[in-house]
Image (cartoon, rainbow, N blue to C red; front, side, top):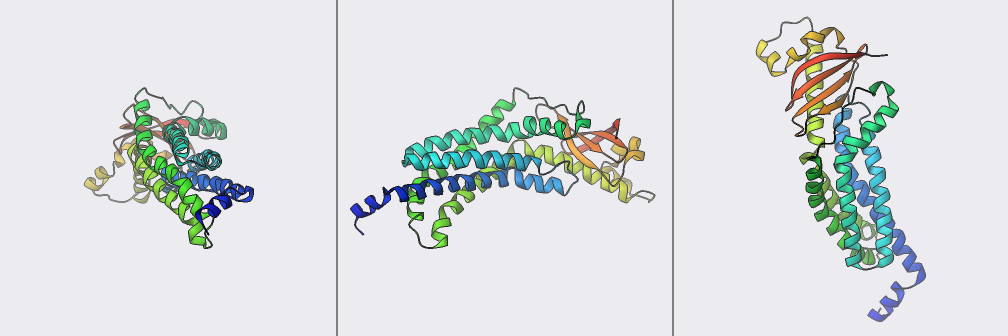
Length: 286
């Protein structure tokens, strides 16, 4: 097939429709990939450490990113120019960056108080001025990988839609997921998710240590290492059944409060750089 015939084929209405549909799926897969690596792995860890609604963050984030991605992929395919696609995806990068900070610190806590009215008055999520710089840092990292995926969308898609093999058609989406795995992992581990997650894991590990060693002689050094003393004053409230959620933090995300719902009481624990310091009963569970 000559270059002229290929160009004519590419401009056929049915081919244009296929390109736009492919663009939608490209964007959806890209958004899902970002959601998995930015919030999915975080949710998986929290689900293993008694997190409260651990998959909520991933669910909301993935739906939003897939919707934004699908729409952007479709518009980019309609324009059909790599430079336009790049500009559109850079706007998407900013929206993803905004979500990396605002989803865990604004959207999720507001959703949780709707789902669990008992949390009203117990969550103190403050949006500090410094968080704006975190959005900027997130945008820089995400823009690199989302921008590259956007720049590659049109040339990769044009070859993929004419491919006769599954791998040829799926190749561009695989590339997009790989790029999102890098960008999503960087912002997951470097900005907000990691300190909140690590504090929750630290408290849950200490709770399990307290439960496992009740009535036993425990080495004092091991007890100090596990910070079991933080639960000494509220030992009677500690039960195997529990749910944990971050209830507050300072501007540097170094001092974090973790709220624990036991069978009878709500307990809040102060955690400083992943070390539980003290816990107190703040409410009786209903």
